[in-house]
Length: 470
Image (cartoon, rainbow, N blue to C red):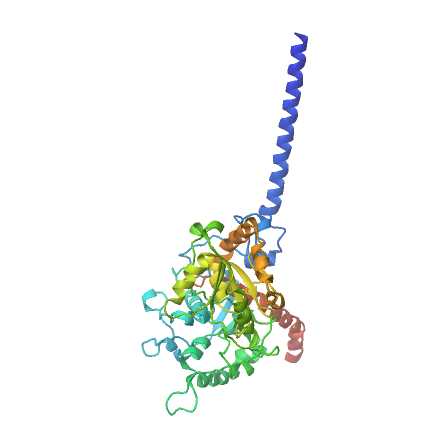
């Protein structure tokens, strides 16, 4: 009997110890979660307000955004934009339609400058095909116009104000990429193209504005996403913040990473649904590239890689274009491939990278001079592979590298691609965390130092005014 009682006491003691240990574990876990999630103290408040944390993101070791990319504020699709609650207050010039929607053939009423974006059927369509890849100008302008209209859903990151003195930035609504694509040729007996004439008019207009003179244009945002757009005006308006695809055709004095914004191309292939994205086993092609092979300047590497890879097993490396069903073929090919090559062409960047991202095909970036969108937030190494051009051209190097990527590592990068792909979607109306939203936040981060310097400069201006008034 004594032995039985002793065994019961030992059992009870052990059970109590286990319960205490389990309770302590959950107490420590709860405190940790409260610290990390409830307080957000690991993220500076200024950054948190701009980018805000997504509590539903995947494990930190897999998170390419470090918890900073997604929008956590509750999205109300029927709320009007309040400039005081937006990240950016924007003043937009009422330029004549010949600078923006008029380039789309928009038919308007007399004295009407902007289309009614509250009625989606009245919004002019942007041309399809490869024109779309440089359409950032269209999406940003639509987003600003919608901020004035109640019940039009919007991320409301940027909101229009009517008084330029209340604005953080001044937006220049010139569809420069469309102007280049559609109107850069001299027509008939004309001495200059429409594109050149518009640029000259724009320079004259801006230089005469008090808003430009205030900071010498440094708080102005000008879109020049096509590498050949703004060829005339860029030299005269270089103090402004440019929204660009890359710096491949710019002097460092005109465009650089300190003042300008790199925006993603608008992808042209269809977006693969994250819930139906083919996994490793269902992507039979190891390496995919389809596009122009013979390029000049930095793009010579495409030709070298073509001769190295064209006969390799499980490699699709062929010439392709947007015509003849090329975009449809690329959509199918990328979605069925494990790795998609993004090789420098005439410029360091191309829309092929963003086609790969929305296809959840792990990008292999071979472009030493490339600049990438959102790289202050996104760690591209979590979902892309970077290969120096000098190594990629060594016989056997690239194939050995890619064949050495194990299924588990590829799957990790694939999961990250599915997470970050929405940040590269242009759409109207905009949504929190999409390309439009992310670009406005990049602009905000670039413009902050300018206002900081201006405020420091104004420290003693009020005192001087008091003295002058006596």
